[in-house]
Image (tube, rainbow, N blue to C red; front, side, top):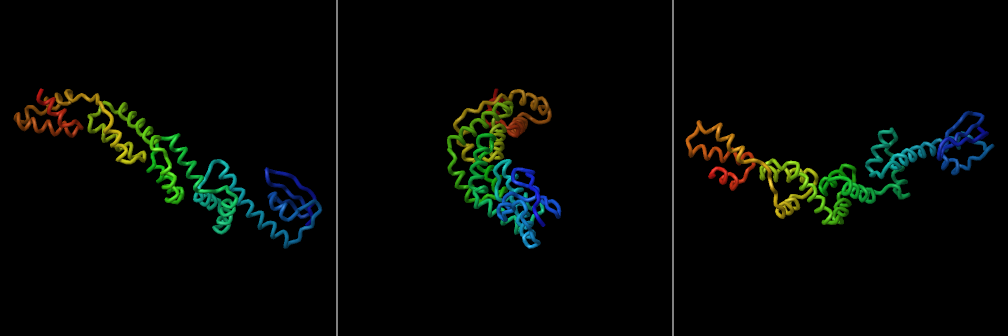
Length: 253
């Protein structure tokens, strides 16, 4: 077959018109085989061109995928598998991306951690779990997490705790603290860090223990004698999250 005409159809692709039909060829393949106007292409050369063009299509798919945002090696691998490419060709493509500096799990993890720290409330433990799921090696994650400024983490944690206090101020102190701790752990913060901050702030609750006590007293006053009633009400108020001091104070009033 002889090349009769070229037509650019994308950033890096051309349609090649010949007396045998039309081929869509990637620019790198055109350059590799020096495909010029009037060039004759025999069956052996055409087979090589088609094979390299197929590999170029895999690479191009990967480039488009990582062009949207940074990706981990695992993400690219899974994406190309879903596209139906073979494992061998995917491995070769990823190797090429790595050698060209277009794929790097350390750089990906750095960017990911930075985004999560400044754009979300997520803490180190949650970020680590997310990166592990994305296929980043644990040793890389641990090294990068150690570089995080502790002041930044403490400031984030203080803001989260302050918000939780405001949202749940009607809860008794014990329940409020437990809710704060559970929320912060879910977001990926260490229990030691949470308790350290909680120990240095004065948590005020707007819960009305007197109101709860009066309701319970009215409900159970005729069911128990004074001693049993006192013990029962203490237990009920403690279950609601009030401290022993708060309970004794309201009962003794």
